[in-house]
Structure formats: structure tokens, C-alpha cells
Image (tube, rainbow, N blue to C red; front, side, top):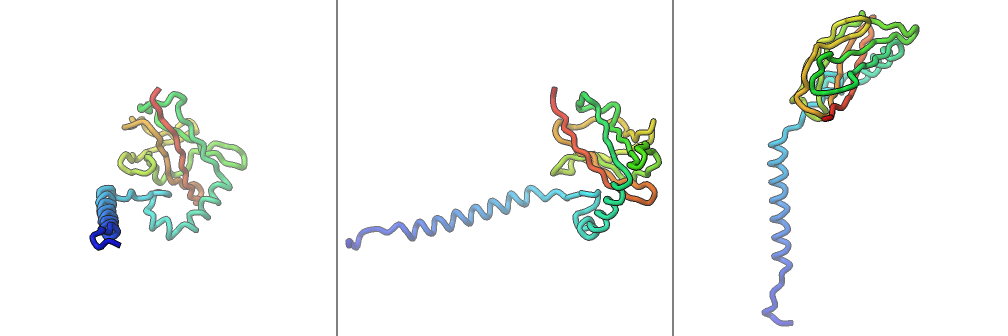
Length: 166
């Protein structure tokens, strides 16, 4: 074997370690620039929901045994919801529409971000709960979620819809 022959393995190993270190630094920088969005299922923080998930599930089960929430969205969806969003609360026993529930909180949001969140106010009108008119800032998937209470039973609702360009 010739003593002047050059071995490239040590250089390749050092180069590989340097590339790994650079990739780790880039990953950390990207993670710091893009903060984690807060999860707001059940309109509470992740920690609050995690701590009381058993109670939430029990409340939701009791609510769904007695009531059903049915959303009514306009057929032609655009960014402008001049009629707002409406939903009907139906009693399961007799299929009677109810308007005596107390809506504790409702929001209009997008998945994976809270940047475009909008609080919604619903009021009773003709056996429906109707929100005020609003204009969406962008096309895409939207979620209406909220908490309501009737006869001491608390229910959580979540309805997704997609608004696309026509």
C-alpha cells in the first residue's frame, strides 16, 4: 500500500457532522419563527380541556341524549354572509325546536390558526338562532364552534364549512 494515498473517510465524517449541526440550527430557527398555535377545542385552553375532559365528555353525552344542533348555511356561499349563520336546537323527544338555550360563547375560526378568529353573537329568531352578518377575510375552510346551556345541560357544538371561489 502506498503511503501517499489519501484517505477521504475522516473528511466525509467531519463533513457529515457539520451538515447535521447546520440542519439542527436551521430547524430551531424555523421553529422559533413559527410559534405553536394554541388549541382551543371546547373554547378553552389545551390544559383546561385536558384537566376536565371527563366532565366535558359526560356533559356532552347528556346534552346529546336530549338535544340536537342542526346548522343552516346559505346555499351560495361567498365571503359575505349577509344573513349570518343560523342553527336550530331540536329536542330529541318530540322534535320540537327550542329557542330558550343560553349561548355561553361562540366563535368563527379557521383550523390551525387563531389569527382570523371572530366572536359570534347569536340571537333567537323564528325558532332559530341567528348570528349577525359578517364578512370572511379569505376563502377556505371555516369552523363555527361554541358552548350552549339549556336546562342545566351544557353542550359543545362544532360545524365546519368550506367557502370557495365561484
